[in-house]
Length: 336
Image 1 (tube, rainbow, N blue to C red):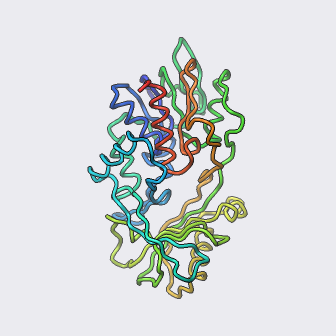
Image 2 (image 1 turned 90 degrees about the horizontal axis):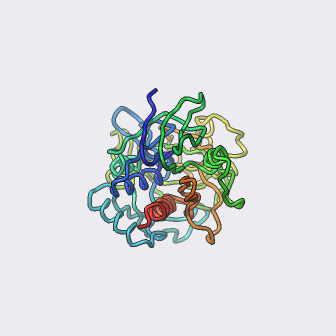
Image 3 (image 1 turned 45 degrees about the horizontal axis):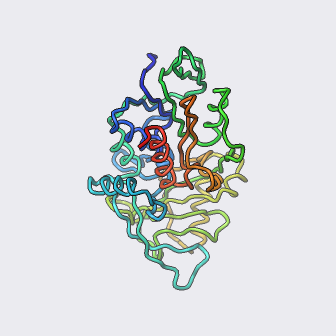
């Protein structure tokens, strides 16, 4: 494997990594993205359910409610105009609400998938995929990034880590002199997700259920999202997210086994007699985390070492938090 050189190495191709890479690239700063999995998206991943169709198996959408920065609002408008994002008008409810449950809301989702949005904003930037950075070392005033076999991955002047907190802190600890706040989250919460399909329409009133169920954290009617296509045999597709407590109690059980239980819980709760088809499932070991107290900035940066972090766990959580964190760190690095 040949090592890469760039001004900035960005570890992670999730929302924060793709956004800060695109901002730095627009500013004329050479950067490289290093991603441990196969491509763009991170926890906004897409999974194929057949040779043609796929489904958002991570974050399904995000709200503009947490977006206040004018530059970020402008970016989102640009992505929407370009067709990278689209408005999803949905009805929401709780699992334990049975009378007048619906509230109409709008949010934004990637088009035709959340991972496609990431590819659209950062796909032109050099990326080294299926590579996990395990160690940082300063040699001759440059950062050298090594993998688990101590093979050199990249040589850069600056390093931006966008990984979940456990992985980010492990990397920061290899720097040695780096100091970060001791109150930062050090443990992520697990979660199982699964996609199920039905050959007939379901008589459920809402498109998005969240809260009020021990096993299910959230259930999203994926087939209600715009610009999605499904096999002709399916009339409805739902994405089920487990609660974190339930996922923890499974002790890392197989995702397929857990998915069957999630589907049974969903059908039992709503009295669904139709047989669901399990389309795909996944176990997120690092799905969510406790949020950082708001008195701290939404990023970590050491100007002397030229190393820092931006991620959803630093920016109030979720996709919007990742965008806020990435923009704030970009402005810190460039002085814009």
